[in-house]
Amino acid sequence: MFSSTDLVLIRHADADTRGRLCGRTDVGLADAATKAMAALAQLLPSFDEIWTSPALRCRLTASHLWPRARLREDERLWEQDFGAWEGMAHEDTPDLGDLSRAEIVSLRPEGGESFGDLCDRASPALCALAEKTESGPVVAITHAGVVRAALSMVLGEQTAGLAFEILPLSITRFRCARGVPFSVAEVNWRPA
Image (cartoon, rainbow, N blue to C red):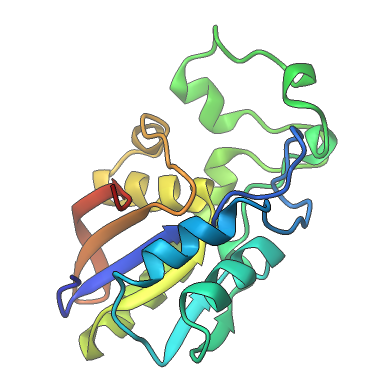
């Protein structure tokens, strides 16, 4: 399923957000997530080590998919910090419909970080994981924002990653060489 030089990013399973914006807000998984994780786990190869964001939703997803793997956390794989918007009901968050992607990249909620900040934070972690692909594929369970940051990095423009929707429990694969992801092999794959 994965080639020897793949960096595999999996967005966590459906989170128990209760309709709220939860970037750095630490929440568990929705009740319905267990069935989807069981279906995906049947298709995945085994790994001894899985990288995760420290978020509970990521660690739980990793533990369900690979119950015997050692989990390695990296703080840089956290979702974007939405600052003052954290915990807001989705319908109460600001409407960004009129902003360009370039404006969204630099938009920083009070007390939080912009998507550009997220890209700058996550890129070194993604490059470090890409370096590990010299020994075989590497898997990380993370967030939609981090997957978009990786897409932005490979596509050479921070605005590019914002063009992608990243579904819960979806797989995005990057081919790596010389310590960097250089091509997108697959985006948003989920079992049928």
